[in-house]
Length: 349
Image 1 (cartoon, one colour):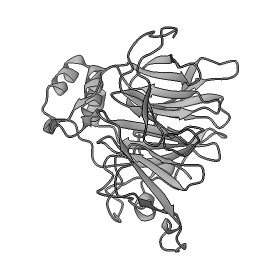
Image 2 (cartoon, one colour):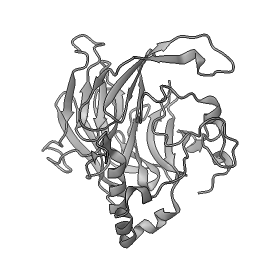
Image 3 (cartoon, helix red, strand yellow):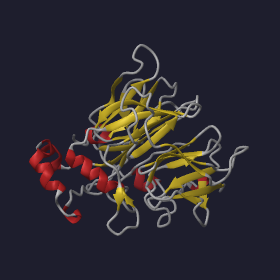
């Protein structure tokens, strides 16, 4: 897809965004802000949970983020143990729910609600319940992202049936290496699941996706939007109405690989694009090509150029609009600071 019209490259993100906690919080896949915008939560690639409090500052016309700065605590709030945390969200009690690519769906108590014991970690589910219509009793591998329904139900994705392993230097759990294995294998094993806290039941709602990823409920909770990264689209699972239980395409033919999706206050969706597709992608339909690529050493793997974007999808009319324009870096754009690349979440306050 050519980047033109509303998709034309610009440097909006470079000029108007601010890098928070650069060099301290490494590889955060999710940014979670409480309803009062007082506390920000982040998860890094090493399994640390970081907490930052808002520090009110006078607005400054040349610094758009100056009025909403956050001060990071000196040490991580807690550590989740082995595995790589990815998506996260707060439940009604203010506790942090986390998709851990190794362990499944976790709860990290923040101590904000009565009876909540700060830093206590619980594995809510790591296996599909036997009563599930699809894949009963199967393990949950590569839990990725989640959103919480007003009734407390957690909707989350498991990207593929290929688990994660430790990085070559042993410092973190390498989700990218696992992703590449699934890409070359053509693993259409991504799933959308639900977890009901009141019963502890975990069900598979839909399966057969090529790396299911970000999750966001519609404003009226009529459906769950979830990303299918390798097909560069956003899917929709209906929770209400005549289409209940069915899946269709919400956004198709995106100009890059989507990662995270978030609901904005106006009911629209923000989608973060992590990279542009490589020209090699069209050849992955051939098993021989996938086999050869899977055997290459890491330094020879496909590495797309640094690029990142955020787009907004408005519900009516059904179209994609820019932010504002198109938050990308392109060689023809004069750079202002480091180019945004590998964008994962987009959190709106």
